[in-house]
Length: 363
Length: 231
Image (cartoon, rainbow over all chains, first blue to last red; front, side, top):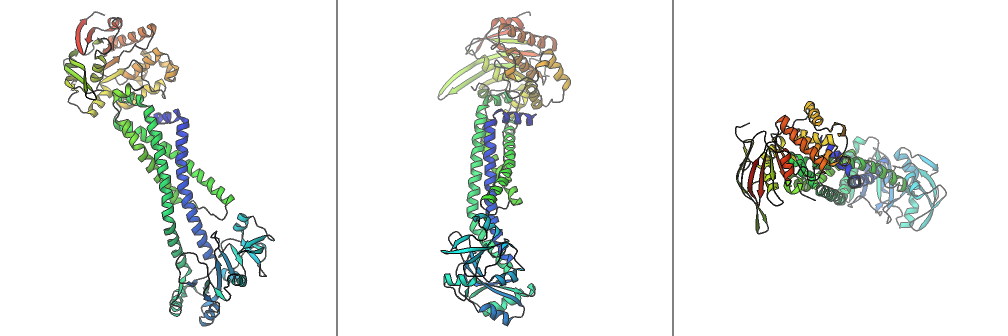
């Protein structure tokens, strides 16, 4: 009977109920999408690092997850290969990060191909001359590039000669020597990747390399991934928390306003229920159940909006991966319900405390 | 049920406070209503009869004096206990019907059953709706019912939990003469055939004379006289 009363009350004002459900849905979608974009970008970056196929990474002693510069000697890969038998591949790469944060990587294509276990080329071929570039298929889709198109990188025109699978080191590749010429980094690397005949040897080798190069950051790729994930999440968590707080606040305010106007409108009905013996708990429970019903509908719609949002982002901004994490789908629901119930608490209390005589004479 | 009157009011006073001004609504009312009696409380606007109705119904706390309803001293019980009393001891009928507009007639009656904890008593539900002649209108919402039908649904809601006392506040105040008569007949039938105690507030002497076995006249917050009549 209570459920029927709750549903009748909600359906009595379809526009108000619909708008409240929509506001809750937007709250859920904001939370899920915000976290989804943040995690998506991070995990995509980690996937590409892992995709190189290296076991150890040598970098300058810098903080942060991205780098742009090159101060590692170009002789280091050969030197290490000669000194340590366990190193099967040693490869240097240079990284340039323009303003849009989309890195451009200078790398020897054959070495990358060998270290990563082979890169699938969807269209075209690897670069063979100075001002040719290869891009991954996501970047090509985002920028609407095809083989043969021209692209401006570092104020120079490059010809796209290949479109390759995503998830291997970078999205934009140019010849190592060209990067060196353009940036003045001849015979220098931003980072050096090492692949071992047995990954289990990485720990010992890292120890030796650190002793050998105390002014370099030497770490396993897995260690780097964990470090990157931690530092990126730390950097983004404050921003994500702010967005989540705003979303929950919006839900709280909308639910509070909706339920407050609902109980004002239904003051007389609350008086009637009290006259027939409805307790404060009964009245409060009706308001909270209405809130819960609106929240559940909003959460379901919010999930739908999130799926739609992910599809739209994927279509319009392929470089921005959105991952709908199951735990954050659950968290968004929990936060939304908590915010909604908090928003409905005052209206519910007000309704429960209404004087039945005054309520019955309310016009 | 205790012996003696089912409603016992002694030196009841009620003062409303508006800002710093005290407005006395009841100035020492004493009244007994026996079980099975149909009493009308007659008086003009402002005589205090509605305040008496609200206090006896447990909707309002008295300022002083004693009110015992079905053995319960309303001055000594908590708000929660008064709420409990309204579930099963008293049933209300209002001038403006006061049906829940979002529910149909049947649901308006069943919500009272649900609150009173008597849901599932289908036999009684059928009996009540049959004697009130509303079985064919149960699926209709209040706005689709005539005033007389709405008031009969309200009466059904009031008696569905078999209260000891039925309190009716100007039950014909919003009805034409034909529907007024039908509602008064219904109340009279409930009193005559089921022994339902009825306390009816009205400003209409004809209505009081038509169905009440006794009439109390109120004026300026006091009892101004009492008539017994053969009905």
